[in-house]
Amino acid sequence: MTHRVVVTGVGAVTPLGIGRKAFWERLRSRCVAVRELTRFDAAEYPSRVAAQIDDFDPADYLARRRVQWTDRFSQFACAAAHLAVEDANFPFDLARDEIGVFTGSALGGVALAEEQMRVFAQRGLRAVRPLLTISVFGGAAASNIAIEFGLTGPATANANSCAAGAMAIGDAFHAVRGGAVRAAIAGGVEAPLAPLTFGAFTVARAMSVANDTPQQASRPFDARRDGFVMAEGAGMLLLERYDDAVSRSAPIYGEITGYGVSNDAFHMSAPREGGEQTALAMQRALEDARVQAQEIEAINAHGSSTRIGDAAEVRAYERVFGEGLARVPVSATKGQHGHALGATGAWEVAIALLAMQDGVVPGAVNLDSPDDACRLNCANAERACTARTVLSNSSGFGGINAALVLRRLES
Image (cartoon, helix red, strand yellow):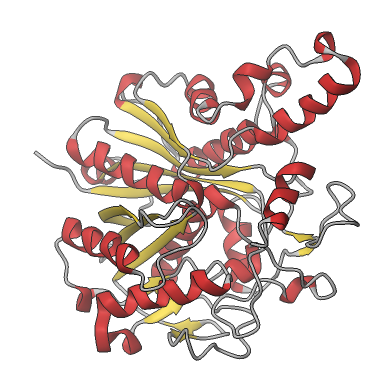
């Protein structure tokens, strides 16, 4: 027996705003959170722009003792989980072993590890944080969420680069649909704004160097794009069975109907130029949802703003949609909130659900000169759109691809 799976809560900790309402309102008002990086001195770095969060206080969500035990990575995750639970008005009247936690993060607690390495080098082992080992591993966020809410169902984590958040949601969707759990907190989290971690991406020449014009640095599918802009934050969704949500009159943002994954098996940092395996992930999601490509009425693109990544993504859409691609409106929002690696896929699933609910397709800010190699039905400004079925696409280093099919519930 399978179950319909719906999203009833959205928890967002983002550079655009904290909480679903602030995040969505600022996205729709075309706010751009990208600016000069001030978290540390990056004066000698090739890239000096980022989308950082400066108004986050973990004490707003966690008890003082829990704040002391956790790092920024887990604090973001727990805060987003609290926001999702509150947004869903979730009563926790199920057995705690029937509720799962599924998280994704490319880098986990690497920022704390980096900080403590400096402490170790300068002051020795006795000065190292005693809880370092249990703070930095990739599963720490899922475990801390489980502890925070007393959830004894599965608490799993993946480290699948920039597709991690989308994959966590997909895995949770399959778990709820298949009956392994009745509800789940699922999403992505990232806290990568630390000197070595940030610097490593600049050395890889993956990030924008538009330091003089930070708000225009991230420009998905634009001819002048020169790399992605790193961000931090978390996005968590509350997933539950449709019947359970209806029985408690919960708010329903939409239904998850399909999930597909693949790997390029090609290169650790570059996608296949033809987009073959990205297309395969999308096709598998469509098959899982039992819909045809022509039934997709909008696309939420990965749109990282890298030269090769955006072009390969468009090739993948051409493979899946053929000549029908021109009719499908596309949103690409990383120009506003930046790219928080494993967290971003969760933000974008939330954006797709909220866009369906409000009948819009968000604009792609900074799309001033569309690249001829990236021909999409993508616009700079928001557009009205009554899409009922949306495809959300995510890809990441290591050739990892994930896609989700989302459906608006008709009233």
